[in-house]
Image (tube, rainbow, N blue to C red; front, side, top):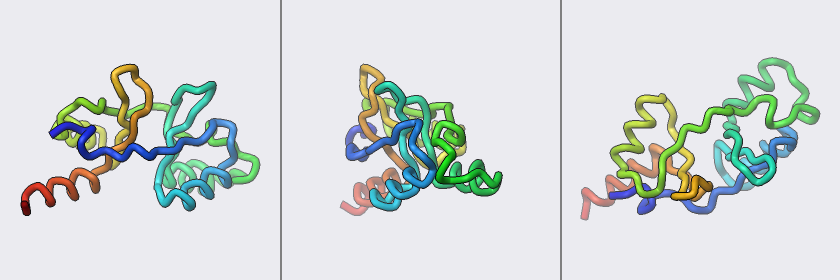
Length: 128
């Protein structure tokens, strides 16, 4: 099974110059724990709820004034939509992450996949 068969395609990102408050509000509205971060139309990182807490709040940064780019993770841990799900799971295990950005053949954001997505889809495949 390929990542494209189980990934979420409805991923919204946030601009790098948005505030941490704006990012948190978007996470709440979208019911997600992370967002791809864009600058000039290109993905430059990801911001997780943990980034906001550990790199922002715990460092006593003002969440209204602090920009997403200041606390985001700039390393893009990703897979491609045509990758086998076993590869995606291996990347998550090796890199100790629960979510991956999914890129298309042109390296544009196509969606995301999480451990939860993999587990849910695997369970539904087994029980058929």
